[in-house]
Image (tube, rainbow, N blue to C red; front, top):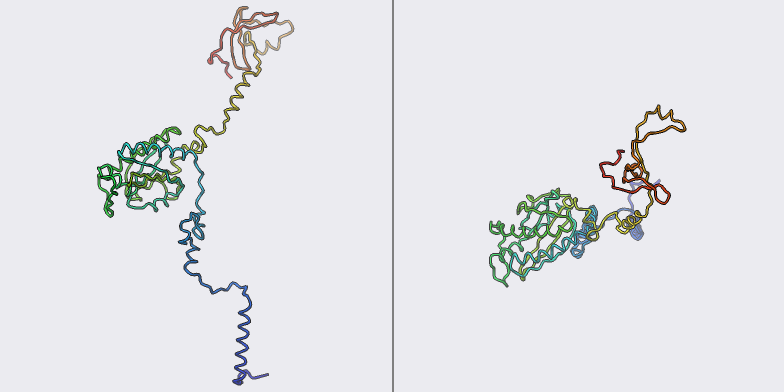
Length: 359
């Protein structure tokens, strides 16, 4: 057995090193199947994984981790009649705002989406005015947001600003009392039109509650609650801005069945054609009527003693009224007689409801 402590000649050391190097090269040429990897992701790959890729910023569909997060959002049902209501609102606002500003106003509906209330509050571009309103008949609240561009445009138009000049914006200061009052007047006009837009569907009154500039003070539902968001664009020649209406789904719950209709007046679970056919066929239905001459109360002992030839005395006259019944329901009263050799009853009058037999 060789001594491991013996010295290795220099030539043998060079040969051994070359052999080890060749073995490492052979191992490197074999594809690895193990989980070990020293590759590091670059910044672009990390952004793509997290869904922050700038190239895909314009796309609505997020990718990576953001797609997983957004997949937790509940897909809320579409309310077709709500689109009809906001189309009516756009037409009515175009007329009312022209009368309000004495200017050429064009109102357009950008989109109607579903969003969580907390996400919307965090996305509001400040400064803005947040108007809280209440639906009286539904006993719940909604939110109207007027952005800064619209605020300064309304102030400029109502206070006699010259046409053809852009509205002056002075950022970094709180809104004055005059600005708040003018915006409040605008909110009253929009709420009046919104009430009128809902009238054909369900009468409701939207009442102005308060005006806030801090989103924290305009919280009307829990941050995780779902809400419907309608974005309106208002153009007054070279001026204008955005107005957004946020109505929680809890507020719309009393009229949810009506908003699910595909068209105005749709009746769920009813078929008018079948109803008319059933009503016409009922007139041809045959029913049995029984003529009751009189009713007497007899003891069970007397009934058991009845024999062939026994007589039962009725408290009625030959020309007395006979009651006609359908089952247990009294229908008519008439007089008995003969017609063409058969016993007949001539109807004299209809039995009132209070004279029906008790069940």
